[in-house]
Each structure stands twice: as C-alpha cells, then as structure tokens.
Amino acid sequence: MKILAASDIHGDVGAAKKLAAKAKKEKVDLVILAGDLSIFGNGLEGLLKPFSDAEKKVAIIPGNHDSEADLFMLKKRYPDILYDLHNYAFKVGDVGFFGCGLANIGPNELSEAEIKKRIENSFKYIKDAKRKVLVVHVPPYKTKLDVIGRDVNVGSTAVREMIEKFKPENCICGHIHETFNLEDKLGNTTVINAGPKGKIIDV
Image 1 (tube, rainbow, N blue to C red):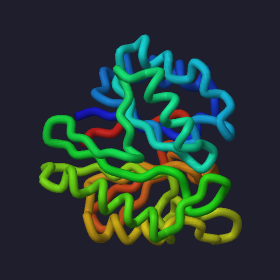
Image 2 (image 1 turned 90 degrees about the vertical axis):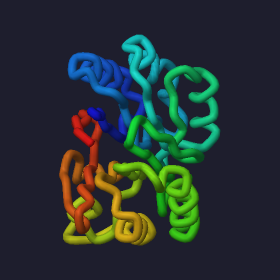
Image 3 (image 1 turned 135 degrees about the vertical axis):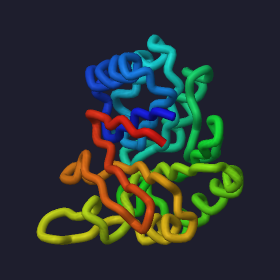
C-alpha cells in the first residue's frame, strides 16, 4: 500500500494542490494529513478540494492550530473522501490506521493522559490488522523529530509510550517545523515528520 503523508500545510492551498498532484501522479492509495491544516481555523476554505478533484481519500487529524470543530466542518463538507483519525480508526486491506490529533501544548491542547487514552481506544479497533500505522500531530518524546533549539525535546511522552507498547510499523507526525522530513526509529517503528511537502511511504 502506498501512502502520501504530509503535515503542517497551514492553509496553503497551493501546497494542497501540489500534494494532490503528487498523489495522483504516484497513484497513492491514501493521503494522510497529520494536523495543522489551518492557522487557528483560517485557510480551510477549499483546502481539501484538490484531493476531492483528484479522487483521493484523505485521513486527517487536527493539530494544535486546528480545533475539533474545524475537523467536524471538513467532514461535513467532504464526506466522500475523508477519514477522521482523531475520533475513529479504520482499515484499508490489511493495514490498520489509528491515532490522535491536537498536541500536548498550545491553544488546542490535550494532556498526556488524554493522548494516551485516545490512542489506546483507537488501537482497539485495528488491533488485529496485519500492519499498523499510528498518526499523531506531536512527535514522540526524545527523538530527533522533537528537538528544537539546543537539544530541547518537546515531544509527547504518551506518544512514545504508545509506540513502545503497540509497536506499529510506522508513526506519522508533524508539528516541529525544524525537523520536517526527518525520520527516526523507536524499536522497529519508523517515525516520520511528514512536513508540508509530503513523503511517499510504502506500508
């Protein structure tokens, strides 16, 4: 299965058009947008239309710049292409997708306990999938993906704990602009900060 993963578009319709064109050219099976679609709700108008026009399914979670109300609005506007990974989990073939949006800091904040609870609940629905992909906005704590400044780690301890517990093949995240497009490993899990330019992933 081929995925195009991206994050932190921040209302850039031009970036969305480039991603949709890439998804079509590469014949991906699914697009994943790992949060911060908007700038505090601004810039959502028309943001997902390029993917709808390209007839590509899109799984989304909110970032700390988005709200759950933003997610609800997008689901109502694009019901035929959207998967909500913040409140649900789903399977495509033998691949199970689960996750949790928002972040452990910012205006749309979840506590570490709530992040853990949501990921655990989401996992229940895909636990029997042959392969598993965790989608979050904030990267796991103490990896090369959550470093800002001079070795300051700002990731989520709950995300790291859930990766170590459930051992998904892949974890897709975003949030930290300084580490866009970097990868790291936690055990056998490949963790990817997708960034706004997107990254093709075979799962």
